[in-house]
Length: 117
Image (tube, rainbow, N blue to C red; front, side, top):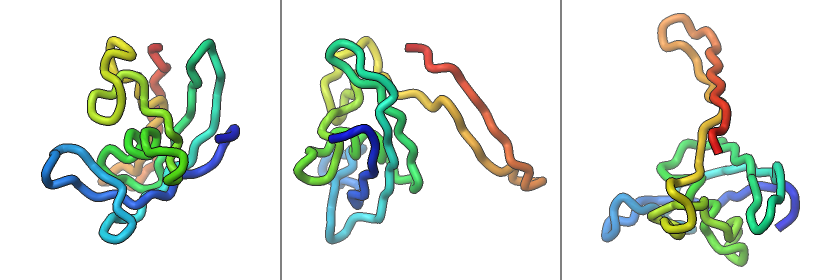
């Protein structure tokens, strides 16, 4: 796949298998995830995922979607909906940094949380 890139697969809810989301080029809403490899350790790869849209399960679906379709082809370790829940004791997805505007003042707020795994 390389060391960095982006996934632009459009997403929508799967009404027959809620809460799952699916890639749908015709009816899906635009979704953009930028990614880059942080480290390769043993049989795993630590990847930084940066969502530029806010679709439900966007990071999880973009990671799990096959490479041939434009995804990363590697589900988040421990993901019970899009991957193998037995691959880790919990889903190894963590928001290390959140940046948002205070709803009253508009001040830019940043929250950092060390990755626990």
